[in-house]
Length: 275
Image (cartoon, rainbow, N blue to C red; front, top):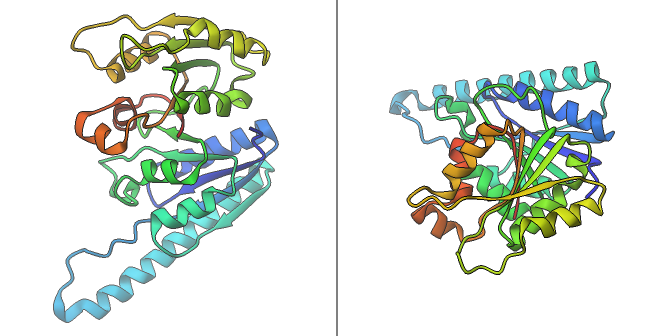
């Protein structure tokens, strides 16, 4: 994958500015064109007093228009300051379907984790998951907590031998070529899995001029894989996790839990996900 067209999702949340800064820095690394896609929640099911419905709707639309103009001005000004090739898009239509359509014309998506304390970060139910699943494009999801002080210097690849993890690793190649440390962590869904060991993946990466170590996750009874991964990210000062998204069906993961769900809810560092 060549990162020549990046797409960053923008909204009215307090985290939009951080996504712009991150996206512009990444675009600079890869001399890429950056699309700012402004998509906000389309749900109007808020309390409306019967006699004030028309006035409320007018005020609501005026506020939406003001927010859009403000977001556009911030994005274009940031692009100009950074000296990057940028493009603004604010299409109408259903949030997920619209985002998916535009995402398919980019090499890499930059999305933000949902922040339960910031109502403006809510776009649609399962917005990130649905865009990731339907667009056919890899995405970097940024955590809402903290700041991204470094990126792709110390990388952890979660490998379980699945189609999704293979796709994610291939999608990550241009991002991790300059990494100082790359570790392939073997994550087996089943004890009797015949998934290739981390050493085989490390050998494949070496042929792409990427030096990687490998290790196996110790089996800890009663501790979910997602929790083990979160601990490893902290213990090894990881600043990018590469993983496949939804190896099981989303229904299974949402009912039973799963690594993808855990990461989207509790991520502490940027995560590159592919499906």
